[in-house]
Image (tube, rainbow, N blue to C red; front, side):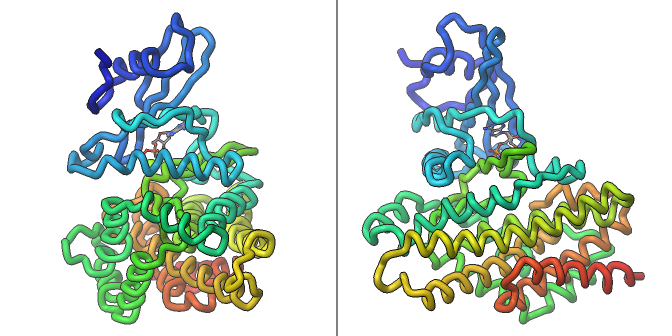
Length: 410
Ligand code: ADP
Ligand code: MG
């Protein structure tokens, strides 16, 4: 009888049997070892390797219960992740781990082992510079997003893809945690430093203009099946080494707004920047900050340049190929990008899903200041989003708040 005919949660021992019995990737006599290396809140990630040849693979399994809280979560997320990974691999020419096999019963994605890379979030906190990152991520975004829109795809094919990537449970998580709870705190789940309580009350909950803009951005997120987006493109979903960038973990993928992916990348670069600004001094830190600032600018500007280039080559549909439509479309993406950047910053500072770039700032005064600086820049990204269209628009706002607010806070 096939031991893997019905779904159950795999152990380190099970994955070795699973690899031997169901995959054609190792020799039958291979001495396999395994280790669970997952660090996320949701799934289980196993590294499996051959003791003799050191060949290795990753097996990522989704369980019916969330890894962190144990609450149920639709297991179809695993299919969505596998299909999105395959599609992004093809469209981006290898900016994701390669999927070797997907098992819809065990909800197991068997993929390329990228253990020679490290998480971008971790690398940034170690002040490491990746000169090709902006080039790589802008190519990944343009090449995976534009070809999945109505501008390039045949109308019926696109609608079929929208259907295939309906991702109810995971979209609901984003709707709640990114767009709603940080602004309303109606479930009392926000986590705020005592010293920043009054500040958040005043600058977020009581800023009715800001709350209205967040609600508009949420509505757009729920009603804009623009492209097959990654849906959770933070620096913990990106693996890097000096000459390589790989985007993983697209289980939040669905048909949504392009600017949501780009805005998430920018916001998460700001977390690294804020951390180093308030925790490190000296030549090395200065050099790093300069690189990060340039990178944020380039991510936006390279995205725009590559988007226009690709648009002019691939959009032939009669209603969409004119330059004035392209300009309108790109402006709309950039506006949503700035809005998303602000939302992602606020939700990570105020909401209950934090990032180590901020929570890891040990000096309390420095953390309070970093959080205020981030919140104030996020508010401007949201409210002034129709005027934030170049990379410099982002860094100028962040820099000016550092100079005016951070340096002057009592
Ligand atoms: P989750 O869905 O639970 O967030 P992730 O896909 O983010 O899981 O994976 C958790 C961790 O496992 C990653 O942070 C990374 O360290 C490791 N990992 C995931 N996929 C790979 C891979 N293909 N190669 C190497 N490490 C990986
Ligand atoms: Mg993850």
